[in-house]
Amino acid sequence: MTAKIRDAVIVITGASSGIGRATALECARRGASVVVSGRRHSALNELARQCEDEGGGAIAVPADVNDPEAMKHLAREAVDRFGRIDVWFNNAAVTVAGYFDEVPEDVYRQVIETNLFGVINGTRAALPYFREQGRGTLINHSSVIGKFGTSKFSAYSTSKAGIIGFSESLRQEMRGTGIDVCVVLPAAIDTPIYNQAANFSGLTVKPVDPIYPASQVARAVCSLIERPRPQVYVGATGKLVSLIREVAPYALTDRLIGRTWEQDHFTARPADRHGGNVFEPDANHQTVSGGWPSSQPSRTPYLLAGLATVILPAIVLWRRSNGARGS
Image (cartoon, rainbow, N blue to C red; front, side, top):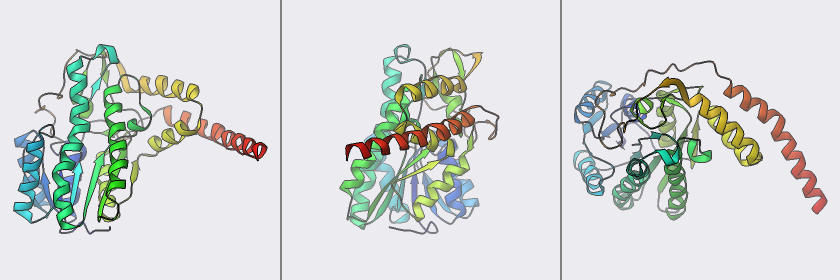
């Protein structure tokens, strides 16, 4: 179902900073009414004022996605204020860096619960209103990391892979209801999530080059609102890696992703072990950007492009040859 952003009512979780904040501002510029939610009251109130200054309607509803009742309250507040919900963007996320057996169990579990069950809780809150209306667009924020995983981010990868599987199943269940289920899959984005990450790696965490601005994800979300599709990638690098992962031998892609990607994710600067914003919000990072330059030299895209150029045609020819022999 296609929709206009102008005059749409859009609920956004995890709106205090990063992609959620960028999306709220982009939707407000286009004339939408936004309901911004997150754990940081002051950041949300400031964002709501900025959205109104941009020309959209806005209210701030503090809520934790881990609390199902808080998500239901968020939905009721949206409907009480604006009369309906057209779009629900499940965006809230946290992350932790470190090898699996070095990350404390409670931190590991909380990352998965926030990212995956936060999406589930938000969906449970939105669906009754979508069903009553006979329409609605659900947009779930996953990641290219949910497609192939990376070393030292297994909790985040697990949660994002779960979002993809959940969305695929829900999309099938919603056929014929007028309810669209979409997934946005960003690559490395310049947001504060890396500054806020729980970190047990002993190193300083940074996004993998090339780094894309959060505004690019916001525009992708707007495109899904106007023309819903099952999945949209943001950043060519992530899409290319996902494609290679599907067709190339695992021994090759494990080496590429596990070594090259991990090297790009960390700097040599030591970092203290800490829990980041996994359990409590971080008041120090309330911006769209995490301060990461959106264009940095990196060998990763060139390695990926070279691998695709050499490997993909060879695999296609090999499969065609085997298919011809078997026929």
